[in-house]
Image (cartoon, rainbow over all chains, first blue to last red; front, side, top):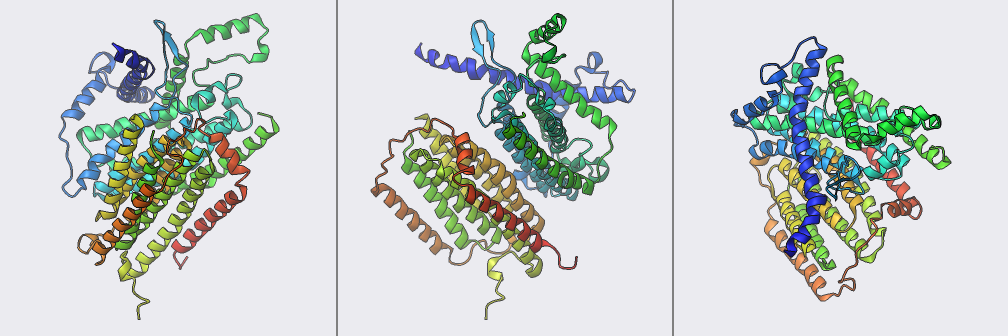
Length: 358
Length: 100
Length: 165
């Protein structure tokens, strides 16, 4: 059949990666919730969910079933279309961001080359930023359409916060782009083969911290979780949501956290490059090269996932540790501190790049 | 392959819709948005011609157009907030204080 | 062939959402249809190998300018809209006028010849070239654009500031 000849390459280059990606996202969206509850519980000397399945491993399934079978209420005074479109926009934008993320260089399975990305865009990083910025609409639409003052306040807060933190985030990303000389995520990883960007003194660590702070703010997590501050705003912009739509908001939140963690790992921690315990200039010592070679034998995907879950743990750790910011403090941090620092970092990076020090 | 004329027609349709929006609507927000529609129509044309002429100048123009649109939106929305605050309406035909 | 189908889809959605944008009673709905429109215009830019502009369209136009509109529309929240007329009393004439303009442009396009009808494909995506051009050939316009942004910033702050503080 001639048709199969045309379709088959697409199956390997597009179909299998897409299926893998979607199953990865769905599994994570379900089980990160359990991870969060378990880790929070351990940090507070509790055991967390234990009843459903061994160690509560079936808890996400139970939650999903509950979400699906609960009544889906649309408030009478709500704007019906906008109300139902809001969680979808948020979810689609979160899904869309994943498309451009490479999880490793391609792998060989049964003689076929399967890439570990769905689309290796040459403006990959800008694409992900644009998806994140459009995701704001989901939040503000949800807040407005609910016709509830707490939802509206939550929506406004969230939109203001996301817009404010997008700017230092974009500058931190631009610093990385300057260092790597490319907007393509695979190129950015490959540019770090000698030295991870977090070690690129003096700008690397600064950009890393900037990106991490604004990434946490962008995903509305503790300590920047003002849009859903339950002690002030009931549940923020999704107060009026119930059933599966509420579940969609939850999924989108975890997916955005995943994207931020993935991007941090890719842009600053060398993505799928193995950890080098000892620097290169020690390379002549036999033991050191041995250890480094041993670490390099672990597949790249494993490294990326290790870094990713490290950051997810960091997210949960923050939630267990820090109190919430006040709203004016939140804005002041972004505009009076992060923005000038990120601009300065960008300038210094450009200067160092031109002088050939990076 | 898509003929260049298709892009020109699309851009013309978008521009016309923008013009009609500016001239008919009473709500000043919609009028501003119609202006954005017209700018976007121009952008489509610029990018299309830049693609077919193998010349990046058109794309650079689009960047400038977007810049100007951003500045315009900021100032215009500030003006609208002032108008709404002082006159209590956002309908253009009710701003008739200059009428003799 | 595939390209043409994709283009026709984009064009149809662009025109439809533009019409919906200018006809909705509620400005919030207009803004949301505008968002749809911007997405599809970004799609057209991708068809034209202008990926960078597509990203800029989404980040700046959809992510910043339109959000600003949405904010102000929601803040002013005009409830009277439902009672009064959407359009002024000349609207049938103006729609006819618009149709005439479109017919004229269509006629010009049909009569005129586009020497580039066959169409070449820009192989390079041209982000690097775009940057080099922007910072060398178009440096002065670029600086002026930044001054315009500054003026817009200062103007907006001055206008929206309350007098008594």
